[in-house]
Length: 197
Image (cartoon, rainbow, N blue to C red; front, side, top):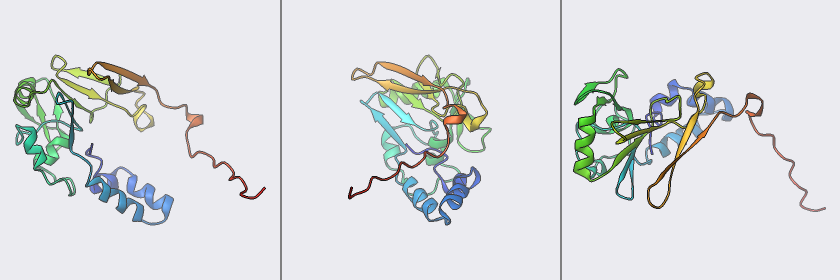
């Protein structure tokens, strides 16, 4: 699912562009990756009951069919429904609020209840916000934030989580920590075996 960091602008600010240039000597790899970003799904539905999205909801979207009409094959716009899906966050409020991020919206439990009822879904599963415990429930377990980057930016000290669902949509959380500092880095290449012995 496409997130707000899968954009040309954000990858230039947060280091992916520079990393590609440093590792590969040109921006070609970065360019190919950002073209692939344009084809990532904006959301997903699991068994018709769990709505998955990176950020959250949009005041411009009331139904799942409206998401299907969005032309996702583009750079993430600065506003509008596509932007909102990637940038919005749940908040203990009612209705819609202005997001301090400068993009997307804050949305309350009443917005979630209306969206879930209109689309016959049980919950919204999203990411986009650091959660120290790896996952966090909102609004009486109708919204779930799952964060899967341990020790974010090598300094936050958070654990990460993966949500695993069985065939009955029963939930299990797998919690993990960052790899120890000494085990990180570029894996060493194993010598290639000789073709002829």
